[in-house]
Image 1 (cartoon, helix red, strand yellow):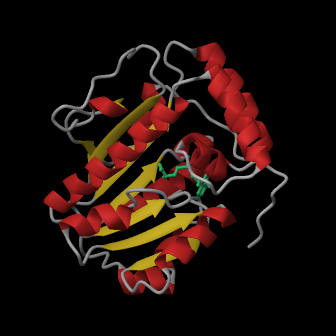
Image 2 (cartoon, rainbow, N blue to C red):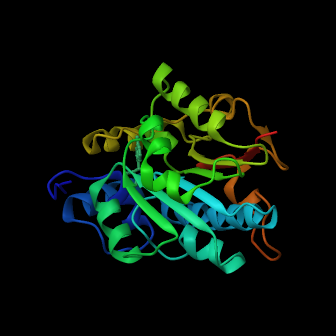
Length: 260
Ligand SMILES: C[S@@+](CC[C@H](N)C(=O)[O-])C[C@H]1O[C@@H](n2cnc3c(N)ncnc32)[C@H](O)[C@@H]1O
């Protein structure tokens, strides 16, 4: 596992969007150029984290006590295990990320916490993740799980391998399991978002801006819960949450599916 401080990383750029400190000059440079193109990116990142916490609450309310968070990122305020334990102290969480910085910081924060597992793996390696002995010891696949693919699928182009991996996760999930996806989208700002995608080429995880239909296709075999695929702040907002100021331009969509 090695961290390259000379190559920007999607995980560390996002950490900068959220006001974190686990980033290098190369990451900050990409982040600054990203803000110049899409000034509300930090707000969308915060909306994304708030969506994640609302999903964890919904899962807990449905009695789901096991979470698999793939593309979990660098730990920041309101992590999945914290939100899940607020509802159920026995909640179990598997954190998976391909980026060594994310994995190192997750391990530092979690130490030898017996109710969490941290893996460095790629989403496409579904067999490796699902069959990992530590995952098998923590997660009971006879019971529902909540699979979180939050702000990460827009780094993965469509391919037969991606869809095969998604099917594998779905087939491993017991009825009542949930799949949460958030995803970047261009909205009315196609030119700016395409320029943003160009910035990410240097990271090695190019940005893939799917439209609504392509995002919905990622939920194959899952039934969306209300209100379906919507702008992040519009998904089951808490009382008093502000509405999206400019829905046409807003860059993030999210939804939750249930395995029936
Ligand atoms: C923008 S961050 C999102 C972090 C967190 N899920 C959140 O929404 O707050 C995207 C994360 O996905 C990870 N990632 C990108 N492609 C991946 C892949 N193929 N497999 C696993 N993780 C991946 C990146 O390393 C990064 O940490």
